[in-house]
Length: 311
Image 1 (cartoon, rainbow, N blue to C red):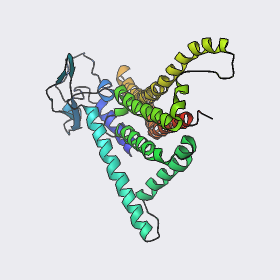
Image 2: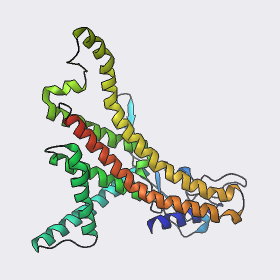
Image 3: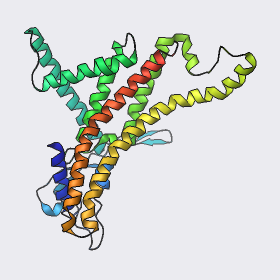
Image 4: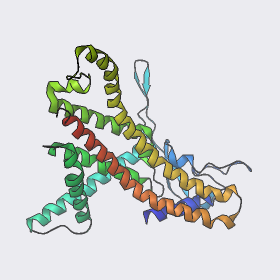
């Protein structure tokens, strides 16, 4: 239902070309209306429902603007943006859903029963991610990494799903958000390696082939050590780009398909883009879960690789 509501909103928005998505006045005649960029970019405002067709069924609310912070020659603007709001909403939803499910599970455990409904579904997801994805990949004694990996999964999932709700926005379609998640994962992976390997951690940075003659060790170390270092940074880079690209691409495709109606200037062609956009929207719902799963899986694999690298 969420996906079809989003599609209905996109269609209603597209069929009101006399006004733009931000609720501003209608553009001059002949000027193209941008209906794609506001849905995939960050901004200093959020959209709320409007029942006025001339406003494009959406009204713009400006977010607070705070005075920038100056640190030496660097100016940092800490004012909230649309994606920041979506991140906060995702965090709140994680707390509400998971705490409610945990309390339901504890309540039914006292009565030797099983939770029902949504709590049962959440418990099934948590158990699957813990027993089939996280623990087998992080390796022995990996219980301490389960809370972090589960938090990553549910937080990314809610961020992805919020982009499929009318008037919502995909925070994970912002490279700054996915890069921050990847950096957090990078530190967890490296610290896990330091704790598991101790002094042996240096072997994951400096390549030193013990089974080769000294004359070959030197050149190999000079050549392979930069490769090892680069490899450490390509992992979070790949995590950030994969999530960002997948969550952005679907929205661009859907809105581009809808815009074909007006590109060709014929409503007779409308059924074709609408059917295609509906199929993409259904696929996007699957992608929202898949990308949260893949991100968590890869982080678990990276943790397991560095913890077991001494074997």
